[in-house]
Image (spheres, rainbow, N blue to C red):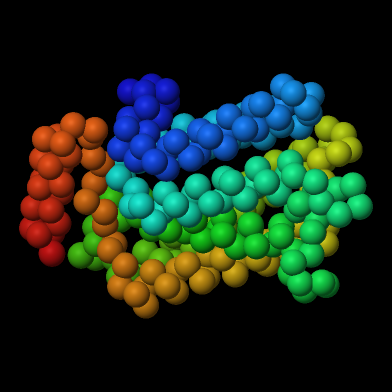
Length: 228
């Protein structure tokens, strides 16, 4: 199944969320054309690639609604932060929500890292032998994966800053605080997953056809019972 087919499949499984997401992308596309803002194209390429990755991964995991909503919130927060105007001619990422304490950028890092941790928790649940892996171990691995997402993001921001001005990625201090809030996000998500007793394995990938979806859930449920 191609990335495009995976996106169509995921859209059919979650039509409302897909409609909202593609509405946001459509608004950005319109902005790029009407406003002649070259920055938008780079953002659209990034979110399109990430959308394809999520859609293809869902074929293995079957992400929960919570994971998808967190990923959706991260995508919207990222697009808004980089494209909407902020103070002093900058972007929304630069705005202080609590003066000298908390910026919009840092909130997005917390949410994005939490989303990556939850998604990684569910991905690991599909691969790990849960009878031999404690929940805390799974949470630690998911948190490390979330931190890896943050590190990759900082690498791309660094490369973007080398390409020219107008990227609003900040300097070393900004990078350091980004990583700190990434750590806050993954730690919070990992603790919530363990303490709340969140499902360590989803029901597995579903198909748009109700019959196939039912069969998939039944097969995965039987496998989980045998493993436990």
